[in-house]
Picture (tube, rainbow, N blue to C red):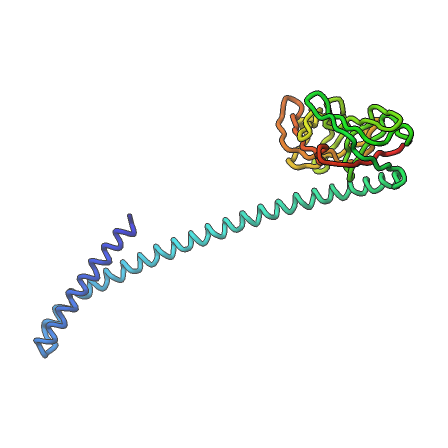
Length: 269
């Protein structure tokens, strides 16, 4: 609204200037002497020039102020973005540091398991339903397979051997409700129990203290607590979490889709 009023005032001033100059030109054309008419005109022209100068200065100051505010706003937004980027880099750096610390522990752990300690097996059949998540492999007691041996695939934990027969065995997947693994989160360091839900695309992490900090996509690995599962194998990633009393309700997306793999490895104790 202010700019519109200033625009109208400026138009009025320019109109007055036009008429005054037009009058002077007429006076020059019809009167050859610079006499009383020009002197009288100067009295009208001078205040008009003063008003025009004042309005122009006010408009110029207004536009300069607006430009300064816009520049400050742009610089503030730029600083906010840079601050967010630095915060993200800081989080990534801390996460990487935590990951390297855990990676060193994993390397030391794997030194205890040479390649000869793993036996390759093919998946014969799957029993995946709301009642159970069980897979059958082509290794049995004749190959040295025993109950409670651990099954892995590409550094990921798949489950444990539940039943052994002479020529084949079956193992319970980590997605099965009966399978529970002591676990911890790489980024936050939170510890809990990884439990199956009889769904191949969703498990959960229970018994996590509400005082611990949680992050989405945080990698969950076996912690090695207990007598069955070794430390350092991936289980899944945090997909969703919420607090319920003094614990978290944490949904996990498994790293490996057991419905798509064709082979696995059994750790020979």
